[in-house]
Amino acid sequence: MNQTEKPTALIMIFGATGDLANRKLFPSLYQLYQKGNLDRFAVIGVARRSLTDEQFKQNVKDSVLSAENSSENIDEFISHFSYHSHDVTDSSSYTALNQLAEELDNRFKLNGNRIFYLAMAPEFFGTIAEHLKKDGLTNVKGFKRLVIEKPFGHDLESAKKLNKQIRTAFSENEIYRIDHYLGKEMVQNIEVIRFANAMFEPLWNNRYISNIQITSSEVLGVEERGRYYEKSGALRDMVQNHMLQMVALLAMEPPIRLTTDEIRSEKVRVLRSLRQVTGEDVGKYFVRGQYGEGVVNGEQLPAYRNEDMVDPESTTETFVAGKLMIDNFRWAGVPFYIRTGKRMLTKQTKIVIQFKDIPMNLYYQTEQTLAPNLLVIHIQPEEGITLHLNAKKFGQSLDATPVKMSFANKGINGMNTPEAYELLLFDCMRGDATNFTHWDEVALSWSFVDNISNAWRNMKETSFPNYESGKMGPQAAHELLEKDGFHWWPVTTLDVETCN
Ligand code: BG6
Image (tube, rainbow, N blue to C red; front, side):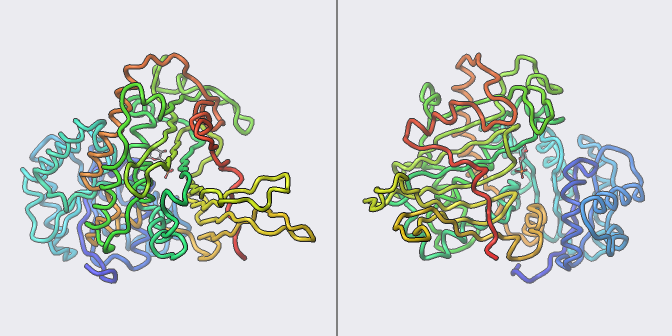
């Protein structure tokens, strides 16, 4: 399908009464509808709870109204929604679902195109996929696609098992594994910044870049997700997917074409070049942390171990910092530092590319050492890029002083960036899998991360909690860079300034 064609499909959302459907999926579909991006479509909400169509439609309406400023055409929009109360293990429930699907297909003329969106507890992913095939739902005359939320397994073994189950019903190119970071405007912009600018790509290598830093920090704690998070921790929750995906986009070679296969295969090559860190070396490359109590904005916050559904002696990490080495010709010797965690100082995701110092500093007379050039990519909440340069100080001196050139997405376009889910849903409906993760990426990411979690499991960690809520992680995360002669660029002083 080309970029301008509008998709036609029946979307079945499994987990339609859940948080993701209500907070993200319904408002995103509404946005697509309002922008005229959907041609013919219908949605079946699938969940265990027993609800009438009318009750479900009201839920969809409420969720749109609480997320959007507009309610234009809302009644027309919800007329495309139906509800099916479902038992995921019972074939007769799938048969009834199939009947409803066929009825809607005829009524809305959907060409037999079906999207199955699994927005629910991962333990049912495999069972559902198997039933979809067994009970005839994947037997369609149009396209069939499976959209699957994370976590995709909790290690390589379980991910392989799940993949095998879903592959019985869908081929690899029918599977859309969500990593919502790939739907973020500025994550998608990484490729454009790199490959559409003559001034960056020639410098994008170990001759000119000294290190790259990726920070994704959150202020929120584990909230009501203790049960899931206890088994996951920051490594599986954020590093295995979002952080490694950003590393891959920053480090990949220019693809020969901007097609899904070419881009994915370049990303896979990066993940294959990651230096595997195992056993005792893990302590040299990775730091883990867990938040203790603290006061943030005058509010006393509990330690992780005192959160709901969390073991009072938990050794689950809520923070990870790591040094990744990519052993290929372009990146040999350049550390990619990553850090991510909960209950940190600010909510933001930023990438800092630090260029090497110029060969000779002519401005050494000044007390100040010359600041390195930095390219900062602001992923969220600000969206834009800032280039840190040195320029002459105003006045009679010849001293150099740091200056910043910024491009702020929102400031320029004057509009809100589409929600990641809006872009991803639209891509899936159009059959564009570029911004979804291929099985090879998932498998390579798990095998990298499994080495680290295995080593951690074997090390006795006694010093948790090791950072106060509201701080940027434990001291060891700073030492990780200091021993290489670097430091984390403070995230709070790199705010985007608009150009106008
Ligand atoms: C999710 C994690 O994948 O990403 C959450 O499961 C985390 O724990 C979230 O809070 C962060 O996403 P964002 O878009 O707010 O940076």
